[in-house]
Image (cartoon, rainbow, N blue to C red; front, side):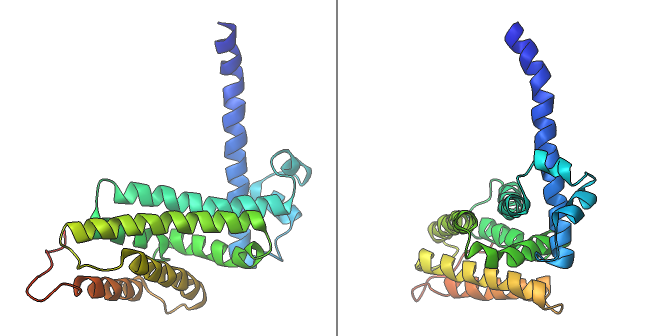
Length: 216
């Protein structure tokens, strides 16, 4: 009984702490996207998040920790969205869903791309951020390899090197994130066309006499 009473008192404080950290990360996202990393300081972060400067120390030790958490949250948010979007799909339909959630096709994914691109340079000299980036890319790459294998088993593509195609897709999506941030002419249609071009090559890799199945 006592344990339950204690849990009943402490749980709201734990949830509130996590929610406030997310609110601060959201404020950091907005400022980084609008001003860049160097022009984002703790005073402005506190004001944007609705706290005093000193209050931020209850949730983060300093700007560097906020930047690390912001970078990590980009990948967490994308991975969660991929899981929801893919659902029970497999093969090419699943692969296309994954690609769409990484590419900067919407306001949400473009904002994430702005944060990621802004923080990549810092990740070059920050082992923790470099590890976060590598782990996310490895996870998405492994998912793409699995979906390509499913597509091959289902007769949607030919006998291709799934790892090579997954690397090609990943490199393309990372490039599209940079292009989406820097080139206002970049569009969802052009991004989709590039992914389709890669997948068309996989579909064309059938031996003579074999044909692909119709996409679901």
